[in-house]
Length: 325
Ligand code: TXA
Ligand code: MG
Image 1 (cartoon, rainbow, N blue to C red):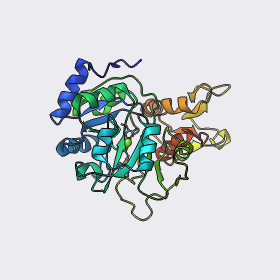
Image 2 (image 1 turned 120 degrees about the vertical axis):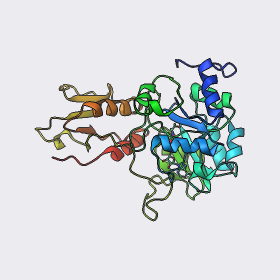
Image 3 (image 1 turned 135 degrees about the horizontal axis):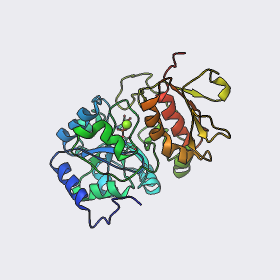
């Protein structure tokens, strides 16, 4: 149970206070089913600006607009038959669509693009905050730009505590990785970020194939929405397929997807049984805690590239940096 889970009709005092901050142009952290977001009123450009400043995020990286229902979604973006079908199938939930934008959304939110990213979250705390403020909310992950996303309120407090107006604590986030992002304005539609909703699920709902691995950074390396250098922990991280790739004298931490049969002292695992959803739920929290103590760097096993494993692999690849041997 989420600590703050409440009937939408009766928001708690914390939610009402947070909504007060939102309506007066403030910013604050809020749990979602994916990761914690740093929220502000999507219709207030100066509040959105504060989010970029608090995160140290470049203004060319556009934000996701979070909505409570399809009516609110239609006020910020233009839907067609396909996008309505996808919304019906995957909303509320960890799925974001990049759609043609409407005038009401300011350039600062979309980095000047003619599209806007929209998501209808399922987390009760995020939903009550949208309902209580009566506004769509922009919410990037509540981490300093370039660091892994927070999956607990404590993660947010540690890094952004002094810089934001409120932190709503809803316990650890269920998914643990950010939403799937689909570009709906291209043909075929493109997977911009793998996440909890898999390409197979999207194709099944659409009845047509999508581009699963669009080439990033080729034509316009600095194009808005196409930044690649995300999610890095400070410590060095290297991926491995077989344990034999790890040097025999390696003294750092080794992360496995599944608990090894005979774990050593420097062995960690993302899931007892090797379940990929559980692994995704635990990934960022484990990287954060090891990042605090790691001296010799970390190795992490490459997960199976299926379902949410695609999202795990994507985040791990972005976090990987060269080991100095
Ligand atoms: O799960 C999530 O999506 C979380 C929670 C808080 O909702 N939010 C999140 O936001 O991950 P953020 O800002 O960390 O990541 C949003 C990504 C960025 O990489 C951005 O470039 C891309 O979405 N994006 C936003 N608008 C876009 C657009 N119009 N076209 C292409 N990419 C876009
Ligand atoms: Mg982010």
